[in-house]
Image 1: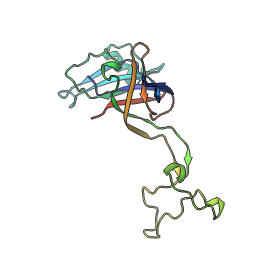
Image 2: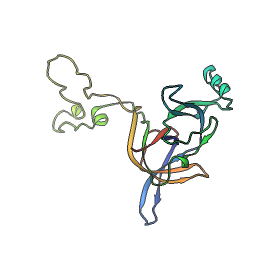
Image 3: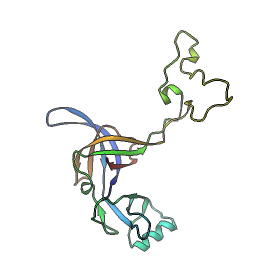
Image 4: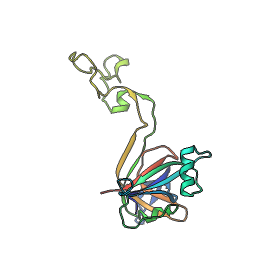
Length: 206
């Protein structure tokens, strides 16, 4: 089957283990993914499975032509490719369910777009230590010196104030707590990147 899955992030909540321990989990919705294209090494140079996710009212000509050619009655917003890691090849138009890729207790890596936090200073953005409180009060959260006069410019990559968030972020080693195939609801132990109702990618750890 495929190497990962796409789920829609929900809100965090708390659940109790059979031993009575309380843990924080993130609710996600993992509806079946529809296969839109099968890429092979002979034709495309590599093997992968392309799936469609999300939906929109109107399609552009490129996506409309793709759906017409594949004879699929879909209005997808995005496409995503996953590696084929087994000999079982799905059919175009077929559905891939979450429980066919993952099971309870699997350790996964989750990738998403982090929340946007606007323009932030170095204390919030990079975790800098604040200046001594004995000095001027308007310099407490400033970065201080950024280096010597040579080479006479700000070195690329210098940690300074700027836009914080809206970056591709991956959190490794998260555990799938439970899977409910009837409601398509899954619980993942811990917090995951992204805002409410955003799409995140789950991939198996190597």
